[in-house]
Length: 273
Image (cartoon, rainbow, N blue to C red; front, side, top):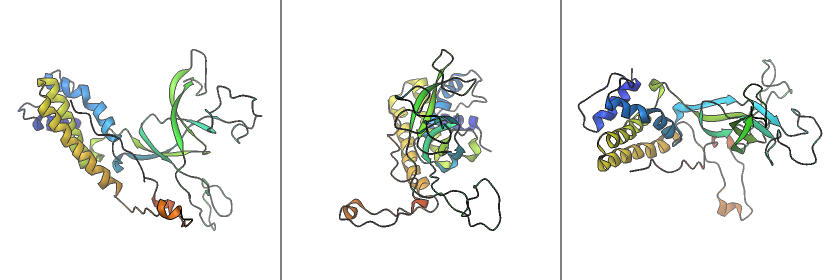
């Protein structure tokens, strides 16, 4: 089984050193250099590709809702007030603590059973309904949340906290999780992680920019390959009418069931020295 120390030793091997470490905290120059960048690089690389090993789904914790919603049936205020979701959004949720990058919010236009029984109830004799429609829009921001109450608090007890804003009631988020278990990670990810770590270590220990940049470029190639291979893993159908046909007034049905991960901008590559 692969361990975190194995990843660090692979990085050391990639820069040609004959030394190895037994622990990331043993205090040697190699372990200090590796430990300095280890977790930050892992999170950074997880953000950069649609790694299927890190894809997780979770229901979001509600912070507040706009007046007039089922969660907040109170009358609307003449002007927006703190404690309501940022306009023009209807719901505000806590950003999951283990989320590295939010991907999409699952639409819930048709949930439950055809008979009207909620999806959380196990019944027999009812035809199931499904989540339909395109991924729901959302935005990431911050708000001042009291950690004791979980509510918006403008007093000194309110702490800047990451939130997710959306118009979806009972929102379910699909996101890339901060995975720590090396043994569930994709081989391409491990390759990118070890090469990126090698680049940071060699520059920290020797200041060799040429070798450092070479290893970071190799990590970038692995990340770019993963964007294609992980994005195509499983059934992917891009059933969307092209713009040049739609502007002529011709449009067709959308198969949103298999297109939630399209048109993602995964950003730039790892920065060179």
